[in-house]
Amino acid sequence: MAKIVGIDLGTTNSVVAVMEGGKPKVIHSSEGENIIPSVVNPLKNVVGRVAKRQSVVNPKETIFSIKRLMGRKFKDSEVQRDIKWLPYEIKEGKNGMAVVEVEGHEYTPQEISAQILQKIKADAESYLGEKVTDAVITVPAYFDDSQRQATKQAGEIAGFNVSRIINEPTAAALAYGLDKTHAHTIAVYDLGGGTFDISILELGDGVIEVKSTNGDTHLGGDDFD
Amino acid sequence: MSKKKLEEQNKLEERVSELENQLKRAVADYQNLEKRVQEGRSELTNFMGAELIKRLLPVLDHLEKVVDGSRSILSEQSESKDWFRGVEMAIKEFKQVLESEGLEEIPADGEFNPALHEAVDTRDGQNNMILEIVKKGYNLNGKVIRPAQVVVGRKSESSNMNQELREEI
Image (tube, rainbow over all chains, first blue to last red; front, side, top):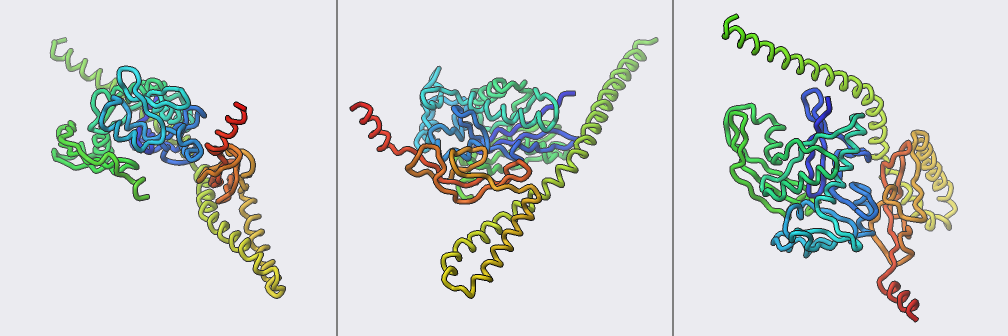
């Protein structure tokens, strides 16, 4: 039976895992690491750690933090804030959506994310020794419909059948088996490489509801490590 | 057969097929796991070796730096020369042991290649060529365990403009 992989498509790093013997197992990348930097140079066709190694040489060609643009309009205040510090060019594309431009080539955030997902797919296939087509991808609880749709599209471009898009804090609660205990309310802190989120979840009867979510979209491990 | 019994039988049949599927899945899972455990055993041995060697690399860096730094000072003091040669030989021996485990220095001259090198800075110079090695990189049995940290040349804006001007003239 074909395996379904779970993907944390992060702002700074991405991770892929698979269920083995009833437990999640993180799949290492071809570089032997548990994480894959969410970095792409679309012109040179390099992704992950290798793309990160050449970012100093090609700062305008190296795309990182693409998750910040996923499913957002160019005029969105978050995009306007990010334009000020991201070294690559961000433009207004089709339907007013934010796109990146590298050496005259336009790429949608979905296309860039798809390159990360393609690497994830290849690494997972090489680990499992079989084709991987089905995936579950996590997104922040605050992602709106357009952002979730964009993430799903990225998965499809990469050749995945996206079985489900689930909230990151929900995935964390499931990973700790908190859904199997009594009904209660929990707080999930997610200190990532570039963002810091907190979500309040209500769990009960196998249902997980995100009651509230907040955080700092520009604070993470990269700021102090 | 009464309707109630028929319903019960259907339910049981459904349950049987559900359990059968679960069993099939569990067996497949087990077989995969067994295969992976076998693969994992040799991988683990390699991994442990790689982890140890990775931790020894900074020690080697420091020893090489000490030797490089001392060479100029010691050249005039003949008394210390023998002692210095001894240290050099010890480092050489240490490197030979690591090499016998499959460690290879990554060549870091010529063109920058992100698969082997990590750019830590850029300077005016020949485009995409390595100008300086900040930290040596190593392969272990053909796999990069530490990329070479290098400074890469980049054509400066002014030299680009000069070139364009020359072409226009």
